Length: 272
Image 1: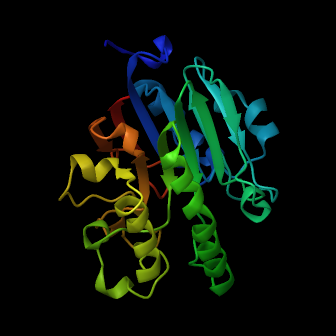
Image 2: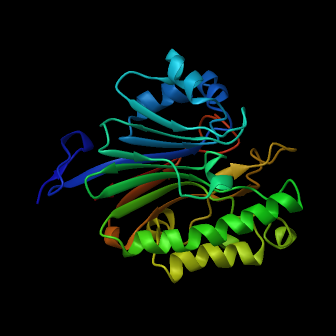
C-alpha cells in the first residue's frame, strides 16, 4: 500500500501527514509575530490552533489570517477575545464538527473536528484552573464530560488525532519545577491521573512520548520572570493518537527558534 500526501488522500491509501498544533494566545498577535510566515515555510498538511481569541467573522475577513493554499475552519467562544479553536488544512474535509453537546464547554469554543474519510483530526483546548476555584471546578467537570467521549472515540471505527492544549502535565519529565507545583493547577494529582488514564487505560498514544520516551522538552513557559530563557517550562500541549494509529508516529519536533506566543508549536509526522 503506497504512502500519499493528504492532497492525494484516499480512504484505502496510507497517507503521510505533518500535523502542527499550537496555542497561539491570540491569532492576530501570533500573525503579527510572523506565525503564518513560519507556517508557510514549514508547510505542514494540517494546523490545529487553540486560544485564537477572535470572532470567526473577523478571522475570515482578515487576509493575514487566511494564507493562500489553506482551508480554514474555526469555532469561537461566545465571549469575545476568549478561547477559540481553529484548524487549517491543505485539503477540504468531508465533514466539520464543533460541539460535544455540553453547552458550557461548546460556548467557550474548545472543540473542532475535521473528518477525512475515516480519519478525524481534532483541535482541543481544555480549560485552565489557574485563575481560581470556579475555573478549576469547571476544568474537573470538563475532564469528567470528556472521559466517556474519548472512550467512545476509541471504540469507534474511526482513527483519531487529538491535538491541543490540555493544560495538564503527565509526569516529572514534563515540568521543570515538579515538587513546587504539586498543588498548582495543571500539575495536580487528580489532573495527572485523569490524563494518564486516557493514555494508559483508554489506549490513547502520546505521540511525543512514543518517539521520545525520556526527553525533557516543554511547550509552555510563563511570561513571568525569565522562564522561557531559563527553560522553566511545562509540556501541556499534546498530539494523541487513537489505538488504530498504533505505530504511526514517525517524527516529532517542538519549535522554539521563534516566539509566537507563550507556547511553542509542535509538529508530529505520522503514516496514517
